[in-house]
Length: 70
Length: 151
Image (cartoon, rainbow over all chains, first blue to last red; front, side):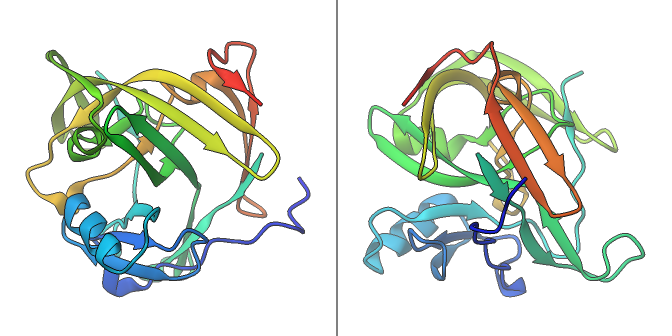
């Protein structure tokens, strides 16, 4: 893989752990956050970001393992 | 299409050294009421693609609450999922892919527990995925079974 021209997404500040965050469209900065998806979307709209990148930040210091359907 | 993993701060362990890298990719979900751009985890350990129910409700996706199943992670913490029909769009500067898939929608008791996962059904079944842990990147190529459109 040639990744020389790619930009790595920035680290998520730990204070957003467990929250929904809205990044600006270029994913360079967090423009809003909320406890729920809807709260974060509304906060992003109030901040003037019409097409944010929405992300649920995992809880701090929790390692994720895969999901299964029994 | 190559996507770099996102780094997360974490407690230092022998496995992580204080930083976790997760293969999240930007993916747009469409419905009759609009669309949202999400970062979702590409998870080869997940049988299904799973989204929180509020996302599907936000975009007005077709939801069939009569079709439900149990999803379970490590440790046996099981949750009910209902089926939703989502239009997905994966866009890079060079290519665009879009397809429709049935996914699991979960209504979490606590929003802190919500996650968006791109598992086999609905996502990985349609792509050839190469995870490069050395450079923390995932490469996706459409598989022969890709059911959608590309441009």
